[in-house]
Amino acid sequence: MKAVIQRVTQASVTIDDIVTSEIKQGLLVLLGVTNHDTQEDIEWLTNKIIGMRIFNDSNGAMNLSIEAVDGDILVISQFTLMASTKKGNRPSFIEAARPEKAIPMYESFVNTLSRKRNKTTYTGTFGADMKVQLLNDGPVTIVIDTLNRI
Image (cartoon, rainbow, N blue to C red; front, side, top):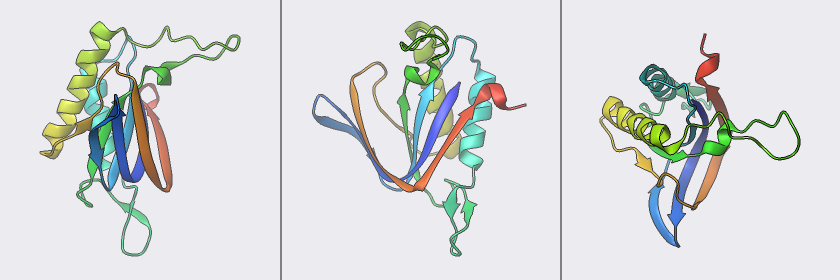
C-alpha cells in the first residue's frame, strides 16, 4: 500500500462537473493498493497518518498531528501510484490490485481512519474520472510505502 500525503489548506474532488467532496485544513491522501496488502497494512498506515506531526505549532515548527489541529482528511484512490517504470516508456500497473481486492481495501482504509478519529473521512469515488484540486500548504508532501515500514 502506498500513500502520497499532502498537507493542504483546502482540497476538493469533482466528478462530472459536480464537487462531491471538499475539505479545508487537513490532509489529501492519494492511496494505491497492491495485490499483497492486508488489514495489517491498513492499521499501520492509518496509525502513521493520524500520528504524523506535520502541522505547524505556534512557533512554526512541524510538531502537530492532524488530530491536534482537528483537520479533515480526503482520500482518493489512485492505482497509478503502483506504476512500474523499469522498462520502456509505458508504465506497467501489474502490482496494482484489481478492483475486486482494491475496493474493499480502500473502503476499509477509509472506515478505519474514520473509526480511529471518530470523524468523517471524505472520499472520491473509486474508479471514477476525478478532478482533484488542492492548495498544498508548505508545500508538505510525504510518500509512505507499507513495504518500507521495517
